[in-house]
Structures are given as structure tokens and as C-alpha cells.
Length: 253
Image 1 (cartoon, rainbow, N blue to C red):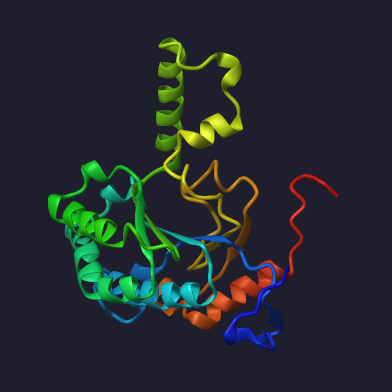
Image 2 (tube, helix red, strand yellow; image 1 turned 120 degrees about the horizontal axis):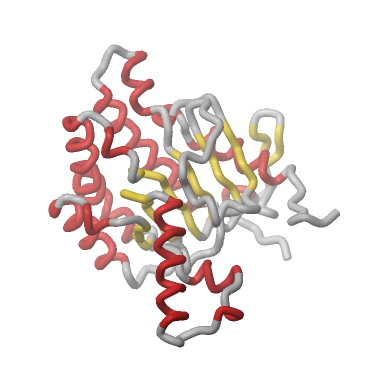
């Protein structure tokens, strides 16, 4: 059944495509790429791009709430990003506190629930504290799930899932024949949310970068040259309109 939203009573044109109230993705995942290049183009330090990127996060979260999207997973920091210069990593680790401390009241007002996926135990204490407070404060919210992938790597996630399943078999908690796709999915960080319907990557790069490799098996991909700090509400709507014009067959005809 089609639903009606106030902002799209008569649908609307987004560039050369029509964004409708029907067939919006339930779960959107985004690889937020291009912060450093955005800063470099302006003669600014890379950290300035990351801070500008936080403003984009706010814009896209607000639009996702407006569109009644169920889940938004943002690739904030990968397990490989520790290789970056130490000052840049230290700045990135401060961003959750800056972002959540100023934005938490609006998240509460918009009924947004904050979650994370990744190996958060390896994060600095101040980063973990900021995340914990946001998750605790928003735990009872029932709207958009804002899911930050921080210190996340998909291969490590899958390896850990295999180890957990092997341990369960060894302890006779499950049988080998019980291992199927659902079993593996239940051992991943994302076990409480659906797989992404749409994956967006900004900045012109065309790869997954170890992000939700299992979960993106049947996701629609959308790549754009727009750098993350320049990825505004209109660009987001454009990606959704492109998604709506695709037919998802899941291996069928």
C-alpha cells in the first residue's frame, strides 16, 4: 500500500527523476567519503573536512527522518583508518562528542535512536563515553535508527561470526546443519536491523572498502562524484529517486 507524506503530497521532480512516496528504501547505508579532498581543494587541513562533514550528517539525518526511512548506517571510521596520521585520527575521535553533545536534543526531538556497529572497545574512553550517553538517552526512541559504523571492518566481523558459530557447535549449542544464512546474519553486528536496500558512496570512488560485505549482497549501489561535505538534501533525494527507478530481482526475472 502506498503511503502519503506531507512533504511529497504530489511527489516532486528531482533533477530529471521523480521522487515518489512509494518504494523508498527502508535502510540506507552511506560511505561518507571525500572530507579530506574537500578540505584540500580549499587549502584547509584535512580535519576541517571532517568537521564540515558533520554538518552534512545532520542534514541527511533530518531528511531521512522527514522521509520516514527506518535505518541509516553511516561509515564513520574503519578498522583500516588507524593508519592515517595520528593528529587526524585524534580529531576524528573527538567528533562523536562534538556532534552528539550539540545534536542530541534534536535527535531526541525527532525520535531518533543512536546505535553503533564495530569494535568500540578499542576506541578512546572519551569517544566511548559520548557514544554510550547518546545510545542510553535515545534507547527508547522508536523512529529512525541512526547507526554509526565506527572502528568497523566487515571481514573482521565475518571472521568473528564464524568463530562464534564454531564455538557454539563445539559446545553442542547448535548442529552443523543449523548453519545457514540466517544463522550467520544473527552473529553479525547488524543482526537487529534489516540489510541495506541502498548503498551510497560519495567522492567518486567505486568500491565497498570492507563495508557491510555480507549485508550488501543484494543492495542497490549508488556512486556519486560529490564529496561528502557537499552532499546535501537534494543529492540525497536524487539517490533515492535513482533507487526508485531500479527493479530489484534478487536473482529472479
